[in-house]
Length: 197
Image 1: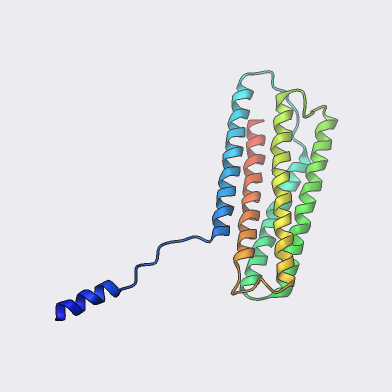
Image 2: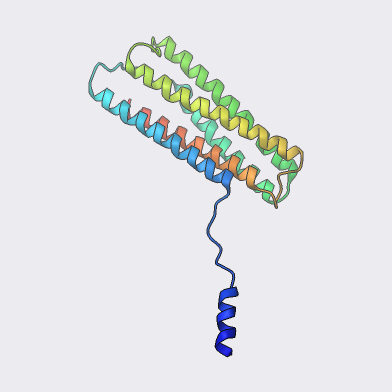
């Protein structure tokens, strides 16, 4: 009888929880991995094409260095936003997201100025592959940064509706992860272009 009771208890035990990931975070990480693969393939193509010769030499616009600093600062303000959300400091959260957004816009403006500087050096999208790669790298990153700005806007909207707080951090965590990734991606591209230019 005792053995039967023990076997019934064993059958009734709840199964262990399986590890699972938030679907939105999973989609974000899949998106990030696909972007990494895209840029890894492009930087590999850059190195192969550069080794073939007929490579235009030009100066990387100084404004790209300044825009790098701007993007790093925007990553810090994004982290500030996440910390503010964890503490339910809604005023700081709104300010931090807004400042991050402003730095993102400033970065895009500086990228445009960088392209104008390239044109002033007679470096165009069409022509020598050295210039083409520069425009493709910076242009694709700028496109992804625009998507990051849209994510920021949605987070800001949710913040004003009090949907982002200490007990509901998913949206701001996704926003922060994507923004930090874009920052790291730009640092990689910038130093890659400086080193292999």
